[in-house]
Image (cartoon, rainbow, N blue to C red; front, side):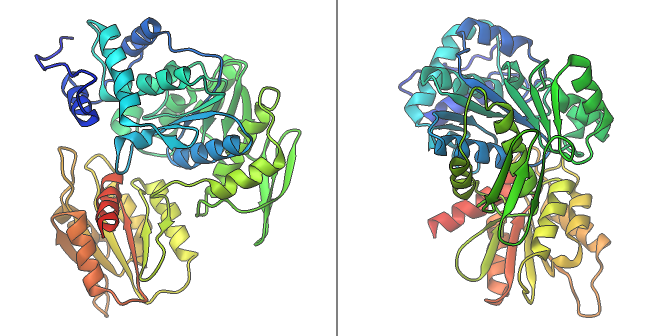
Length: 435
């Protein structure tokens, strides 16, 4: 594969210029396979002695990563965390001890990779994964928490020899890359498991393909409901693992119905690694209370009530719908939705159902964007207006114009939910931050 004739940035160029360059030099934005990135990783010598945890799954990855980071930091360890995608700024993807990496640090690593890769081309995600690993090695972090970008088997994060791997959930998404069934997708995700190492699965009904792969390679498989579980009441909850029980835990700061499942996966991983990284109960309590992750059932302070959720596949939409049902009464719910073409828009709309009284369907920018009109057509076909004329459906050029239309129409005691894509939530979040 040949590099296009594009000027190579230097360390004097901005991070935005570097990122634009990375987007330009590989023939496709997604190029599944580990041969190229593995070869560059060898040249870079990215390994260090810290504990590496890989987190994959259809939904719940980001929350599980955030809880692991927060708990280990509360226990006094140095922690690197790599997640994707970002909401507002690329730097959000790489954190060192809870602090977002600065431009200069990232640029230095990108420049180093650029010198070493020579004739090998890399995708944007492969470059940035290597940059994160180089930073974690440079800072010699005790623990690196790494979120899989897409699938598992052929994802760049899978070049890491994980000490513990977590699959949070297996559901239908990214079908053009991973397959059309849970069995096919489970097989792809299971490849982050390692022989003889803890392999945590918090999906209550894991696909047989995942179980078979874990058994075939001899992974130390921890299953939700068998090796770990949780129980709780309205005030507190408890975690039960193979040999440890953690009682009287406060509910995680991250909101939503699935967060105890995600927290349980994190605590199972922590238990499985206890011989290398001891974590006291107080650090778990503090860490769960301090974990934060923007855009995951994020309820903004003040009135009217605004909920931001990056739910962009049917499973995530079902969780969002359940979380909305658990809130207090609101006369009307206004839904701002924008989605990408490769997502199952119809099923996402079905999961939300008639909980949304007023739909504001936004077009998104870029090649993968779905038009607001297409979303509106699907909503109208699935939910024709009732005798009260609900739901109403309008079309908008951008998520921000959709959000502004919702704000104009709504009463102060209504609620707005913004969902459907990271792109949708990021656009509205940027608007809100500017005031």
